Length: 280
Image (cartoon, rainbow, N blue to C red; front, side, top):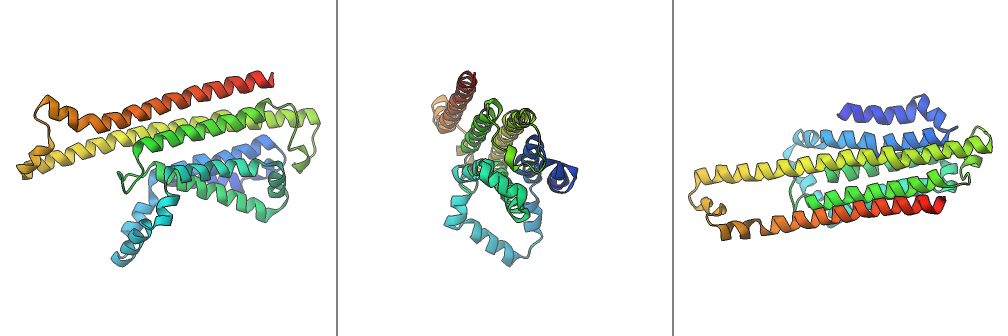
């Protein structure tokens, strides 16, 4: 997975795709898809930092542990912050003026690509963090953040796809006809809209799978604990009332998450419909 993620980043920045991206807006959006979502997702799934941390000396591991608990790092690792950074890495570099600067100035293009990769790795690192709260983000918040990213992709992608004016024609290094340019930008908007959202759907499925695995680990740990200690058996409810109290909070959290997920999916559909109707 790790090398597959690096391959995505390499293809987006060094292969013929990169040079073609200076001529075609649609190809440039494929670059952004690889840099911002596909590559970072594959890297984060492989969790390479866990292997690197395990190979460090104990004093460095303690230092990194203390750094991870710093308020600034915890703020940046919050689902809302990580999600905002990922969305900003898309929206900011889609502003026509900044898009044009990145097309013409290599240093600005490098900055844009680096910002997308780092924002993507930071976001998916939060999303696929194996740790439970409070060390890691709440599982429900991770799910909601995935839906929020999908909404942002659909919003920007649908606007770019359905607009009737070419916004990026003057920033392409190779001139094309206005009609061809508008069609190219329409395809680019589709890349932002559909494939990017499909990547996020895959990420949401992985988060739900990780949530289930975390619950299995938790119950397995409790079972092992009861075998070693009679007092630990109190962790397991013996009556219906005890069971109800035990599962009340997890059930509420799951219910809220599913309700918010349903609301977000409803908003996704409504935003798409309204955008299409407005464009027509």
